[in-house]
Image (cartoon, rainbow, N blue to C red; front, side, top):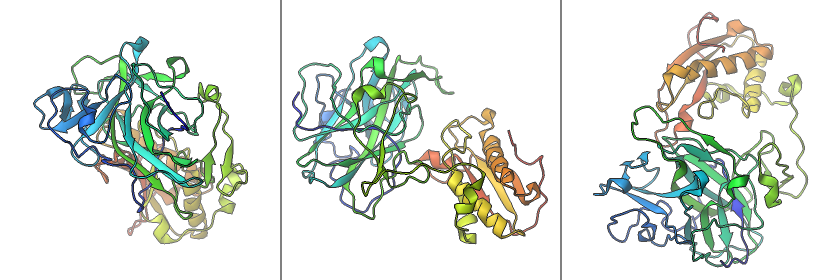
Length: 410
């Protein structure tokens, strides 16, 4: 295995960029010939697997159900972009199955000192019994090769700010990281490079509607990969902590990544200065510039799957509170939604409404000015279903009376 320089980027969310994507065949759409079985990633030229254990390619209308799209042996998933996607083994219980990796050559070499936004999308297979963290991208000057099926491991890396376990199913989770090139890098490798003893894994319940037994592994579908040069005005908002949007993660020791709680990350701003801490507490609203009605009417508060926590949305909610304090006659309606993949029995739409309601009222807004209702599973984005897990703030045209019986404040 030969690597002159390497980085592992872990995951989070990113917006769309207008610049050129350096990753060829990023959605695995270009296929040279029909595939018949698993392990044929090389048919999606120029993608390959660097070890003897080959990654999988999934295509529509396949005669082999194991590699079909959208239904296959691991469950069901529609492509995010294009017609198919790839699949990798990121973890298996007691290392029963070897891990698999994706690798390709960029359309051009990276330029020294330039920053790039590296991103891909993942979806945990429906029948995987486990989910894991430490998925990432390795970048190198030369192709990585190994004449075995061992775990690929490397010395230095850039870690994510949040060592999250990627347990989202039924939809694509956008993930990314900012990478400052040393110069000459032109190969990327996607997979899990961390030994089992340093991983965090969780057990996943079998989703409703599936009767087949779960597999004792963490298997992920992969789609829509990109490496894009960043200009000064561009952002790659990965694992962003509110108030630290311009911060980037710097290289740290491999051994420091054993758990999320023990991780210590030094954060620096893009200008080289050290990032300051975010101010919490009741005075936060005073520092927020009052928003306009256009900022408030239609405001969306997004949530993670299976969650009704507003952590990460405080800055946006403080803007809402500041607007309401500056406009004492305005009332708002808080409407909660779930995605169709979430269980109605969990009542997450009501709990999400309750979280927003409690926060706004705790900041001094009279409860009579905050109406609550449930919106069910009305979708606004079929591809990125996390967008549907939301609370929407609207300014009603008709008056209403705030009621503690509307919605839920659990």
